[in-house]
Length: 138
Image (cartoon, rainbow, N blue to C red; front, side):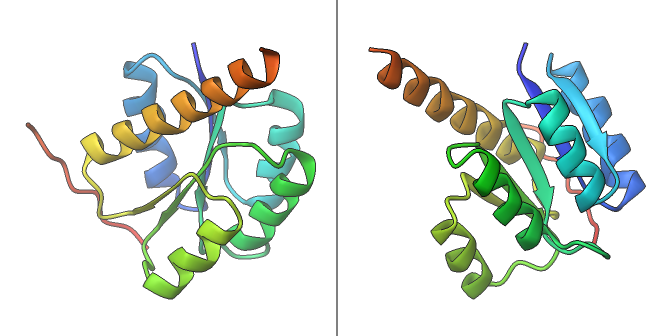
């Protein structure tokens, strides 16, 4: 079972993702901010990180930079309510696996998780040898 770390300051989004991802068979770990997220990242070693971009104290970009320092190949999906094309380009330069706006369909998030896990699994192997629900948030 793949472990997903969700780092988001909005409790409603965390709770919703916890419920939905758990039902899909993922082991979900929740963090309410960047500092807690980094602590859990070090301890839990998730397969994928779902990271909110806009958070108080430590924003998603700062968290992403720390994650890249700890594990450059870590799959990270940015989840944000402030989707700007320039921001997406900058984040992709940091190696973000996927960029999903919070007004996302659950199918899109599910597809993003599958792609991130598949890419991570492929990289590991290489080195070793229609229902749509809209979620609104900030």
